[in-house]
Image 1 (cartoon, rainbow, N blue to C red):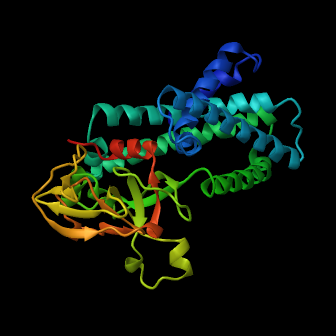
Image 2: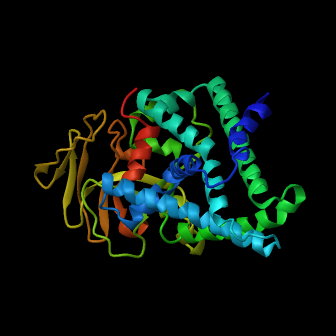
Length: 356
């Protein structure tokens, strides 16, 4: 029954008299860009980090479209090198591959709906093994549907099936993995943070973790603009990702290039300033900061500390946790991995909403 339902999602495609059908073209384009849209958000922010709103949306639509075109070219080259005819099939594989993004498009649309209209959905999900199992089955169904459509698209476009698909798909994967590696080391950036450590920023997760460990502290990749080996000028209020060398043991080649674990916190003190926390208020000199992002503050104090030219002073938004409970306070600039982008902050809010 499941196989029949999944097959029907492709039947519309294989029954088309010709691939140039105008309605299919627009439908496939919307689904393809919609399915890729979330993958390219951090790429677009690194290209234009100061732009958000309609300008940024159209920019990311263009990036997603280019992403799809590039994947189509990879397939053309892969099947050509494998010895199959590819002439005149670039447009076909582009439209077919766009159509196969339907499961991802629906999955992310559903995830966005749940997070927006049911605050705390993901946090509550991880509290119950029954819900985890149900959600896992749903993900499995979507994955089967997703890969089924991909295979059917390749069969329909290149008239190749079975073991004959292994070589061209293998060549494509080499291209794609190399492309992703290039992206991750240039434009597309991110830092990995343990979900358990996200409670530094949000008390909702702290409440969840008090009841049950969050799936043995898995990691969440948060989009960030890399600032390592640059003369970046920090700004008050921005969220950064950083690591603590003392937690890693001796500083060596491995720990410099593969630092872990990372933490996230908000910059409140800049180089040259004297920072003090007095009855829960952050004081810069004799002036208290107005921090509308604080969540559940408590009356704890931190003695005055001078921020040197090579440091920043960071504190989490979850002020139920004092600096003694996590590696906050004075942070060396060289240990900062990156600045969390607007998209990263949006994803973080979806994962850990402000309230339940």
